Image: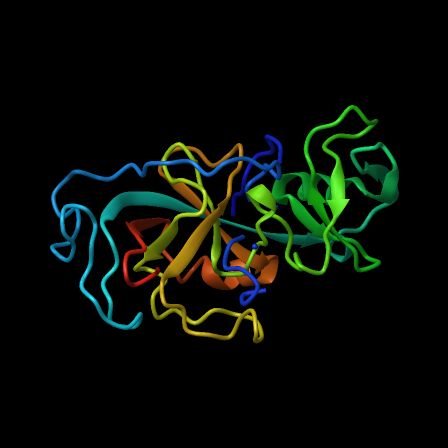
Amino acid sequence: MTRRGLTLALLLALAVTATGCGDESATGDDDSGVMVDGGPGGGDGATTSDGATVQGDASTALPGMRIGSFQLTYYYVTTEDEFTGVADTELYDNMCRSLATVPKAFSDSLRIEGTGRLADGRLLNVNGVCMCLNSPCYRVADAAHPWGYGVQNRALVPFRSIAVDRSVIPVGTPLYVAELDGKRMPGDAPWGNFSHDGCVLAVDVGGGITGMHIDFFSALKIYYRVLDPLLPASITLHQGGARCP
């Protein structure tokens, strides 16, 4: 299990759009251009040179052009209840107002994952570096972001959101992961307990996510532990195409 190392650091029906992996919560413009693997098999013989695909419903439509092989890691919402120890570490908002005092081990985990749930139920999300006594600073997630924030205030969505290196994959890009297709996602509806169609969305970034590497938002640590043995350490990424419009 690895996740975005902190730099600055998406519901399904609200916006399959998607930090806490990404360590950046700052807003910004979408990038342009996708790095495409020009090696043998690129496009899989199912797309035209411009990435167009055959028509059809989503379950039978073909994905877009092959981008390449990517390292697969995971991130999730860490929870204060997982950690013991004295509550001795202060967490602040970006105005240096205290949000909570928590065990240092939870603070360290929150800094890595980017999103965490306090024992009182509030969900905190990294809100950038700051000049407070303890950095980074955090914000309390609102009802439209029940799993936290990706970049550009996109809502993280379990098993749909991924963090990317935006110099390789532009934020907002729909993608297809063949290794996910048909796998049963853990958890309960509406977020889990469904057969995945392979479609994900690049909605997050992170200091530890560089080059050919994606970080898959698995919602909770227990779900990461279910998925990790089922999925390979390296996956093949395609543009979404007609399969994942």
